Image 1 (cartoon, helix red, strand yellow):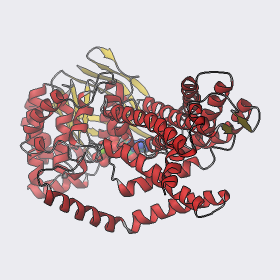
Image 2: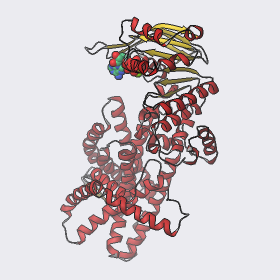
Image 3: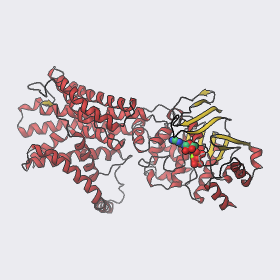
Image 4: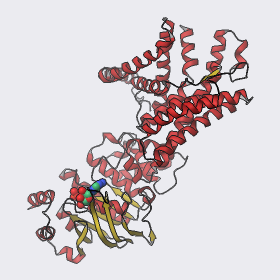
Length: 312
Length: 267
Ligand SMILES: Nc1ncnc2c1ncn2[C@@H]1O[C@H](COP(=O)(O)OP(=O)(O)OP(=O)(O)O)[C@@H](O)[C@H]1O
Ligand SMILES: [Mg+2]
């Protein structure tokens, strides 16, 4: 059981920034950006290349973030200059980036071998201790990312970003330049994807040109799953980061559990799709049940601690 | 001073579905003037509002605000000087966001938005003060989602938001249309109070002939993209609802359903 949880953490924590980016576009902007399928690989590829060229691991992490963010900027440019929906711009990018990524990597898979990564110091530890140390470092990075993102959402710029997704006309009439915010959202979302990809690459020790496939659907599934547990809304910022964290880990728990019970790795995409469906179905049909459960627990809580306000 | 010179606004120019919304329109609004605008459906009233706000770019003509040519500035760049209240109470606020977030969004209007916190203790105090004036108790509900408010409350909030950054032009496009009679009276009182307080040039579009005559110091009648009558304060005060409707219908337009309805209700 402990091993399942550790597996969940080491494979799930790197995805938290990625899915936070997906949340940014999917929920805060109410849009779909498929660029992430390609930019996730771009970020990982740039990071792997930087490491192979002897860059320090944290710099490689930033390089991977920047590489993927650049992909997001291109998507934004396509969207704005050609006046096509973000969905289409991202689709084109996700296809085109495959070739770009292959050129960056030069071979379909680049192994890091003995190159030093953020986690290579843990090689001498036993399996479980190494996992613990690894997830500790990842948790640190993820905590910083989530906190920084939460704080960003509270700024004037972050507020403007949240407003454009809900009511773009109103945002413009309040002086918000929503074209600029589209660029910001796409750069931010893909940069976060690159950061997560860099963490993944450093942990698993290789970058692969196919490592991004299914990221978008997985992210949407995780977000929907998270929303079942934590009800986020536009102004409840703690819940937004909480939703992404809980959703990502729950999603990874399902996958890790599926592997544990002996499902072949090839079935994982099927499990991802099923998770997505179950999350949607639960939202549709158990929404009322969930609401009831929440009301009951809230009442129970307020009965014991009447002065306590509902958490932000 | 707000000046529109020879404005044409044509939707889908050169296509079969071409619509001329404004035709050769020239009008000057003096600083602080409160102007009401009436006209049938499709007369171009909303087009006028959108042209002033920058939401629609005129096909021809220039717009000057306080001596500055703003013709090419998009709506978000004019927002520092020009505030708008829409006819749909849902349009002026972000329902998913809290009351304080909506107000904070309006507070930053006309300034560059950066990495300062949007809601601070000091700003919250200013917000409280502003919404307390509404007498709706919203000052104690700042963290509530705006989606929980009634249409009248939301429209009142939008009015407060419009006033927050002291605009020099206030645009009201049928902002009372979706409200019940009681709420209409409340928001109307708020409107006159804000207009007086702000001293902003105000353009108010309405289908209510009583409002059009009772409020403001100038009245424009629009038809087919033009201003067909322009009454100053004294002329307006001598006008009757019947006379005004005659003036609108006299232009060859059928009086709008809503005006007729108001006429029936009021007479
Ligand atoms: N986005 C648009 N595309 C095409 N035509 C438009 C558009 N907006 C308005 N029009 C047309 O422009 C003309 C003027 O419309 P406008 O909305 O200004 O009228 P209005 O006076 O506000 O009418 P109402 O009293 O119904 O609000 C109408 O014929 C309308 O069909
Ligand atoms: Mg209109």
